[in-house]
Amino acid sequence: MKIHEYQAKEIFRKFNIPTPKGKVAFSKEEAVAAAKELGKFPMVVKAQVHAGGRGKAGGVKLVKSMDELENVVSSMLGMKLVTHQTGPEGKIVRKLLIEEGLNIEKEYYVAVVMDRSSEKIVLMLSEAGGMDIEEVAEKSPEKIIKVFVDPLIGVSAYHLRQAAFGLGLEKDLQKSLMGILKGLYTIFVDLDCSLVEINPLVLTKEKNLIALDAKINFDDNGLFRHKDILELRDIEEEDPLEVEASKYGLNYIKLDGNVGNIVNGAGLAMATMDLIKRAGAEPANFLDVGGGASAEMVENGFRILLSDKNVKAIFINIFGGILRCDVLAEGVVAAAKKVGVHVPVVVRMEGTNAEKGREILLSSGLDLRTAKDLKEAAKMIAQLAKE
Ligand code: GDP
Ligand code: MN
Image 1 (spheres, rainbow, N blue to C red):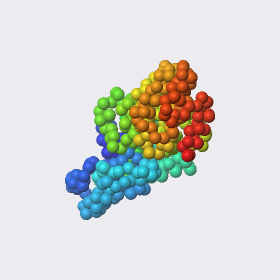
Image 2: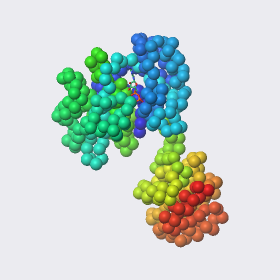
Image 3: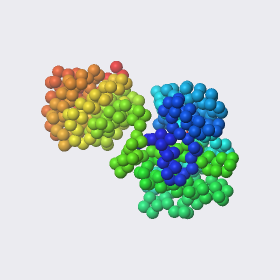
Image 4: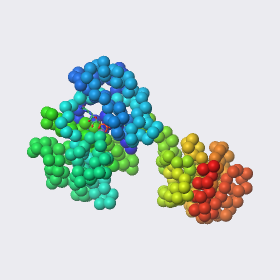
């Protein structure tokens, strides 16, 4: 789960990580009130959307007077912000963060992430922070410092010292950076995060280190332990189809292609997507209806795929084990009749009573095609999607 910058900064404050003074605003009136409260220009107006890269896309603006602030607020609220992380459809700006402006001397990058290959938590830092960190990681990876921490042992002073030393700061700033890193690590572990990031962490002309930006992603599997964090969820920022799917317990992720697929089991779903790609088409989604897929889940899956206007063909690939193929076939026919499927559907089923299942599909009177072989099915669906 993602949260907004203003929410992440509230969490930072609880863990003693310095942040600029600021307030969130949902309307122009609130923005002006927040600015009056802050009192001193320059201020920064920041679009609150679940995506980074706002600075380069016009979602972060420095303002020097109340007039300028009002203008910026008016044009930003309701605008569609397109950054390199939003995709071409962009995101509508509904909330703004009004913050005190800082005198920036230098921008650093600091983050705590999980490293799956070493099975450790990594403190990641760079003195080349700011808006181009992705480019730094790609072109000059030597500028990125990594300190690995065994999660079972936890973070120690020497990890923090090693990480802070790498940025080449003066003594007392190193100390304050160690405190910030300790705070980030504690947030990461205590709140079950998958990412905690400050980009940029700025050194001000007054020689203070302050988190100018804040990003926290949570591991969904840990959220049941954090009811208060679940309240920070902003459904308006999430893909509406994904929100709908989560209501039915479907593991659905929307993708950019045009071949919709309904599969039981995450491993089979991955393999199916690979085969669709190999056949020259692009999957429109990942959808795992689970090992014990029911007719109702297939029906919900159908409905969600059909409301994605990119979907030109649907591929159902089910291995009937817990769920027998004939029962599934009846479910597919019932769901297709109920929902009214208007795109070609290819069903590939294997397992218990597969033959009987295919017969049910073929004699249903619906435009359902069946395939025995997975590769053949993928070719068929790729062809249908092209037509
Ligand atoms: P992002 O582009 O979505 O990651 O948004 P950030 O919060 O990181 O802001 C982008 C950039 O805006 C920063 O790297 C800064 O250079 C600039 N910026 C943000 N706040 C201030 C501020 O208070 N003063 C100044 N001078 N620049 C700022
Ligand atoms: Mn940033």
